[in-house]
Amino acid sequence: MGFSTDAVHAGQIPDAVTGAVITPIYQTSTYAQEELGKHKGYEYGRTHNLTRQALEKNIAVLEKGKYGIAFASGLAATQALLSLVKAGDHIIASNNVYGGTYRLFELIMKDYGLDFSWVDTSDLSNIEKAIRENTKLVFLETPTNPMLNLTNLKGAAEICKKNNLNSIVDNTFMSPYFQNPLTLGCDIVLHSTTKYINGHSDVIGGIVVTNDEKIHERIRYIQNAIGAVPSPFDCWLVLRSTKTLAVRMEKHNQNATELARFLSESGLAEKVYYPGLKSHPHHELAKKQMRGFGGMISADFGSVEKAKKLLKNVKVFTLAESLGGVESLISHPASMTHASVPKEDREKMGLTDSLIRFSVGIEDVEDLIADIENALG
Ligand code: P1T
Image (cartoon, rainbow, N blue to C red; front, side, top):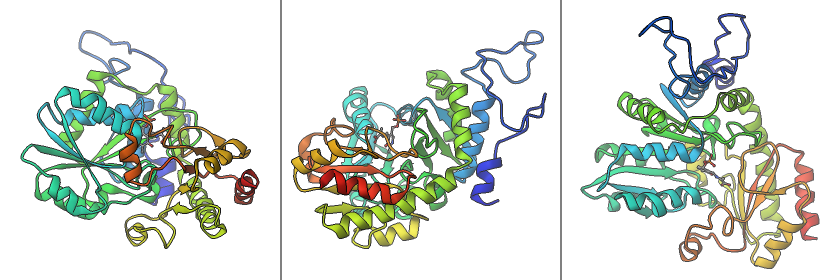
């Protein structure tokens, strides 16, 4: 089936009792058992929930994977993946990831005996050079948040296979509509469903997708044992949203393409980072491994004063953390999403104090362009 057909139908079984077309919200913490040891396969809400199962199946199909395991947030999903390694193991990670991922790895999990190397994975030789005896995982984010750098996933997956390492890809920025890392040979896909997959800025959630039975078994075990599960209502909201993922992503992509062109041609910004621009260093790779360029743009306005003026005066864009919703958001990564990253490391990758990140929504693009012009006017 095509993506949109799967988005609407995969994992959606009409309710057995009433025939309800939409999967019900099974808002229950436990299930009646007929007698000791005899039940319908549902024992306890943390372990089993049919609304959650429907969501997991739906997103697994969209990511071309066999198994989906849902979590209460993107970071809870990331944390669960670290249970694939143990104290003394080493992980290679993209040097520019979401600031919260950096904080979890570097400022929390390091204290539990894990070791991390942060490398620019857009150059595959950096991954090879960082491999040690005790390396177990390669954690990739592509395009990265907020610099929008790309990693060649096919090449990275080959290196991982050759060296017996598991590859994880945070695919949040592209959503399964524009990029499917499992089809490029990667082992695990991770999403913050808070972003494009839910798309309406009203849920915090995460999911892991894989084709590997052993990884699935381990992460499923962790989902229950640690218990960071999403609520049935949140699963239902996300399931409602995946049905329109394709149409939303098309519009995000179209609006961001126009806005990126405007920002770079108008001269309002000094540097514009968007994989769809020919000037982007990884534009050719973007055309190959993605089916669109997404809705995220970063731009350096050259001075903190100009950046602040823009953030203060926009009216259609909302100054807020997060991304991927139908409404356009604007943010200041250095002081907001990436404040945990040391300033020196931020600046090395171009994440300056005058960098602004745009999450381009699905409004009329003329209004978005006028909003930026007026704010700086
Ligand atoms: O917020 P949460 O659902 O826990 O997801 C964390 C996360 C993981 N991966 C990526 C690429 C992300 O962008 C995020 C969350 N990001 C933001 C809140 C933000 O404004 O960038």
